[in-house]
Length: 269
View 1: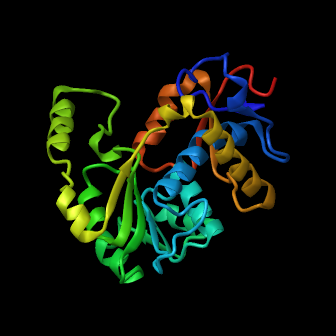
View 2 (view 1 turned 60 degrees about the vertical axis):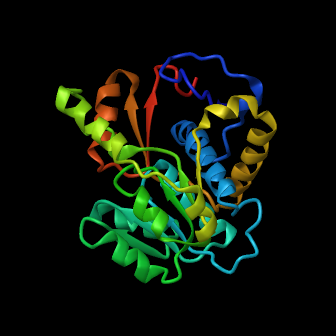
């Protein structure tokens, strides 16, 4: 079986309530199965908050933009958006070696912001704006993401990557930079939300612990998509548990593609 623990997963053995467990899908490795719950649950809840699941809205705009689209949650969002009929699906990456991965996932267009202006390319890909933008970047992109929404569009926030240090060493300068990032975070005016007909939503998965019916419904859909081939985890990089610092270094480098999984000595037992 595999499950979602919410917290405490950096352990060789954990106790997990049975309603948070499910059988490893056929043909999926233990590493792929371990990578699935958190990223797929995050992605599906983000789509639900945007009003795109369980059914698409009546509005004509179906354009979505996914930041960090080659990462764990981003790769799930691209595939799920394709499965439910969104178009165009615009994927944003920060390095050229990630473009092909997003194209393989089903992205209509991939913006490599290391080579082109992100917002000019985003406007060209969806001139009418976006019905949903999924942003875990934080201060670097939130304000412009909100501006790029179409009327009735939703900005879904589930992380603050650019607010965090890129080095494992938390020196005083890193703390100052984080404080400056917090002070620069955009403030969303309730009156502007109404006049622009836009929405902003944010979350983290900790609330799942009390939402057993929701979790069950989400994973019914996720496993159905895995079963019919709409959802896959093709890029999973594994590390032994005693190499956690190296795994975190890979995340912080911004160069990883897909999901990173740390395996315990008991993995597969």
